[in-house]
Length: 256
Ligand code: ADP
Ligand code: MG
Image (cartoon, rainbow, N blue to C red; front, side, top):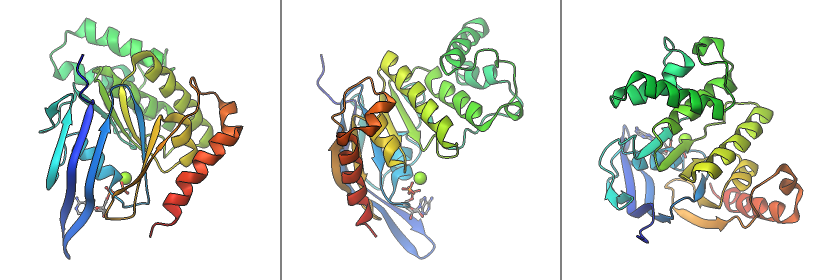
């Protein structure tokens, strides 16, 4: 069995060409993520979390450095290898929930019956059984986000990138979806990179939380979340949970 980490980032720096000149967004990022790990990415607003995710997804090319996923360089979007779920569910308004989830499979040329069966299975997994024929405008924010998560899982990519997927939701929905995500992750053991500004959410979900500095984003610390799994809500009241959250908060608070 290969011991190559699922995700490897080496010497990555990135500048944008901003109006005022080059803007250094990320500096000297090196990170290895073993297969099946659930990794959080936190840091002050504007520190480059989304940029890093876009680079992992092959949507932005880093100005320097190298990213490999499963040993292969990332050289453009590859949704069958690397799935992405953004904060804004960006569903196609003229397609039903089922068709939104099945759409990436259609693009891949999968036969209709097969892709619809797969999409229905995933909708059930995220708790949307019975809503298959609904259109996005008939769904609540939380339901739309579930559809987007099902779509992210639809191609069954070994790596799933999530950029603040629950940020727009109320606390209760966020917690519920977090639990659902953990359940799905537990069943499929994908490698997950999860960007969030919610520290409680980060500690609750992750095996490890990578803390970035203020811009330009550098890795300040990788905090191992040594809480038992499966996680249940009671863990949040534990002393260890509080210590880990506090540790991350301290690191972020001292950033500009
Ligand atoms: P985060 O997700 O951590 O809030 P981003 O990755 O969105 O941070 O942005 C990092 C920095 O790069 C910010 O200062 C942002 O303004 C800048 N930035 C992001 N995208 C672009 C772009 N396309 N062109 C110029 N600057 C950008
Ligand atoms: Mg962002």
